[in-house]
Image: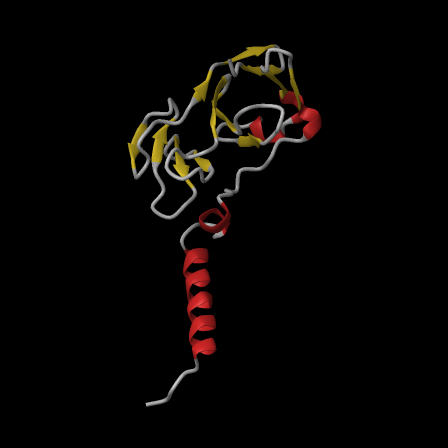
Length: 157
């Protein structure tokens, strides 16, 4: 029987674990870093008002020009990171992007019209935030949205 050094054993184990983690999700990043594939919104495509509501200029967000499109807003000026989804024409949803299980980003699954945690064994949520299944113990926080012409308004308070 061939002997293996301690260093080779440790390096091999770490490599195998990292490879396994990378195969756990569509990108692998989510399991390790908590980040999904939802594209971030351009910084010039939204404004944050004094009342902390977010005004998204839809003409500057091509990802929301079609049903099933989604973007994320990660901004230190607001208390929560968001995922914004166009469910159908003139029907948008805003939710916390953080899964309530481990804080990994959720992603919108257009074919099932639900949010799914991007991590291994990820929890699934209705667009209302209600948990469908998975390890999460609580629903996703959702926020009211309205449209004013070509502007989508997300109320965080």
